[in-house]
Image (cartoon, rainbow, N blue to C red; front, side):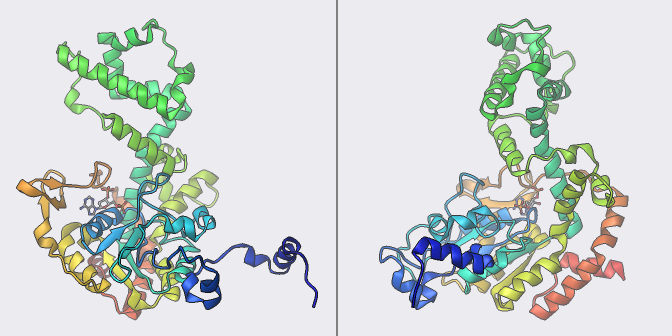
Length: 432
Ligand code: A3P
């Protein structure tokens, strides 16, 4: 028997089996041959036993936080790249290998009781995530949160618009100036207090923001924004006349942290300013011959809402009993009842009564963690926003658009032995 040297052999192998170039990681302890060569230093228990798979904008962060409040559940370490989400199975991180993934979880202390989980909201609609997850975590539990797909699409679009404002600012520095003008704060502060002028030591009139290259980098613009805030505060302290500007109507872009958050959101929003250019109705109704960028946005907005297609994919890789479908509407209004179901589904040793540790915060309009002294800790500003109502034409369009998908979903859920979410029941009644 003859063989080639290792490198050439590998080349030969991959030319014969090109599909094997894309790895499919498995748990090393599932296969004796793998286990035998797996380092003695490593454990096979440093993987999650629960995945919250999304989709985005359905309440996945709220569920992630609620799960983290349970003493038996341990979430992943937050990712610096993508905020808290690891995003291993859906994209390029997968090629970094399982050691990279394991680093996101603590070293197991007592292997039988450590119950790790992670939430990555793009797993749901990913074509590859379900197969990859099932190969590595065949016994994992899967939770998906489903909200009315029309509502999800609308909220998703609103977020794109908001996050992309900052993108516009970066790309066209003159927009920075325009945003200031629009919001009136910084622009007026400049004119009336001259603080920023002092800092810049440039003439106030004739500052050519359009050509200011300074305002391009994220760090610098964060700094600039900080200065603007100082100017604003200084101005408030002076209590000088505002020339009719009502500062109570200050725009959303008020703090450095918030702006940085928006900057981060922008990074996640794939740099696409199209949402600013087109209305929600234009996005969802774009025709086949519409500009490509608009079509891409349309698809990112609508496709995650093809729930039956995506859920079916997960169901071919995981048994129905391993999957829990959470009603996103119920998660908003009765999170404690949802958590009762979740705990049962996970078969946890200890049961937490979430009715006792959550409280409705009227200011936030959502349920939040109850702290000592009756105070509440809610999700950050970027979660749980209020948007204007969707226009009736878009509502009618989406009802029609998602009709067959929703009917298909109800069939699938029936087959899976899962109850229908309340919004789906209502939707089906209305479409008859
Ligand atoms: P908005 O932030 O658009 O209002 P996700 O985390 O999957 O992106 O979902 C965000 C959505 O979760 C929020 O949408 C909000 O409607 C919903 N949500 C559910 N429970 C919540 C809670 N307790 N606090 C804040 N938002 C919650």
